[in-house]
Image: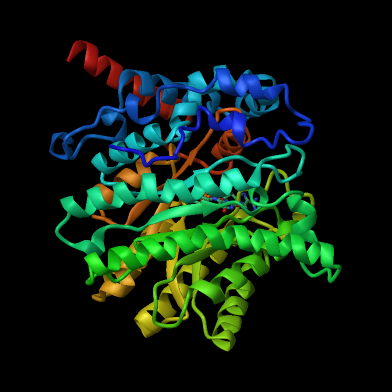
Length: 468
Ligand SMILES: Cc1cc2nc3c(=O)[nH]c(=O)nc-3n(C[C@H](O)[C@H](O)[C@H](O)COP(=O)(O)OP(=O)(O)OC[C@H]3O[C@@H](n4cnc5c(N)ncnc54)[C@H](O)[C@@H]3O)c2cc1C
């Protein structure tokens, strides 16, 4: 697969995304990031099975190489029980990036170069996961890294053309029904697209021209990415006029609670510019349903959109920051309350979509969850719909490497087509915070795909491979 001119692999990126014109406070980490950039991707370690070779008894583990199985066994050992997991989490900052990358990085991260991510996409397709939510993961919510924002914007735009476009064209060529191909999503992390992001987001209502200018700069960077999304949607719509959902979508990730009101404002500005009535939803925002106000927030966004004559796309998540949230009172008191809130959110959006179809205000939904019950709820509601617009504008998503058993079940047993994986990519040193959140998340819910059951399953596959 050819990469377009000008799109340099990220092995060179780590030098360049840092703005060298000013002093770099954490400069000592840069050489480490360079040296630890892995040349093998998750996909290169995945056996790409012919789908027919997976028997009904197979599990997702059967499709993995020995090396990947080793990584999964490592996760199993880290999550044997809460005390062990807590110890690993405590030690996490001290573990060298190279070691992390060797043991678990390849499970959760799509690669460090575009070429590796393209292969990850191909490997996912072979498992029936036909698209990605692509996130160039360079996080700087504290504003301490002096990141070259323009470079991130440029690389993000290039990744739509160079990774997501070939991915969707390849999948479309293999599918009979164009509306069973999920869109490619390009993730925007607000904290990576402006200097001093926390302060800019906290001051989104501050009328001081300096804050106004900086917030506008953030909006403008997100607009540049979305303009590319719109351009490519128009281009492919001409080629495939029967498509009922966008080919590409910008997704705004949700951040910690105190920054979220600024992020909501950012989302709205983008919705109103790019999600025109009766057109594709080109931008999707995120609501964290563990927040007590989340359900009201959905209703508020709907109301504002109706008044402003634009459409809203939503990615519903439970929320990833429960461990670091300074104000715990904003989060639902119990896991059960979060679960109820999440499922109500799904039902509310799907009701609007089913009723108004292409003119629905809430026009696109990503059910971003590993929870089997919530995912099945969305599938059950959709199974009653005959409408292409409704079906193709609801996509299930999980994080790469998380709950692959749930993904496998949805594809094999519930015949879900519109399913994607969130694929972070970038220099390993930058994806370390992301890896930590994934480990913490492994302790948030009882899962059948970690701990001792995972170790046991891996061992039995090794045994099968060695002894037949
Ligand atoms: C495609 C995708 C995109 C994502 N994007 C974002 C994003 O932009 N921003 C973000 O914050 N997260 C994001 N996430 C991460 C997501 O928030 C977590 O993966 C999710 O919370 C895990 O929950 P679950 O739905 O998989 O279900 P489960 O595993 O059933 O639920 C675990 C979750 O429940 C909640 N919870 C746990 N214990 C309690 C408790 N005692 N009280 C209240 N609530 C509790 C927490 O949110 C916890 O993470 C994304 C996930 C996916 C799959």
